[in-house]
Length: 86
Image: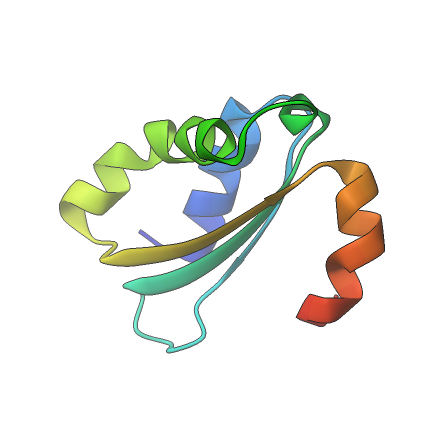
């Protein structure tokens, strides 16, 4: 599963989400995702991550080995995105 497919899966399943999916090792198996959504507002971090990971279960069963995940509300993303080079 490539980064574009994972991005689309996340954005189709999380309300008003914007996802940035990177493949820093260029191996298609060790990915990073930055997901921004107002749906995360007031939600515990574990719940945010579960919300993202649930629709990606199939990807992990077939091709993705690891996903470093960071989730943000739009306000938090605006304040912190420069830390991550965005």
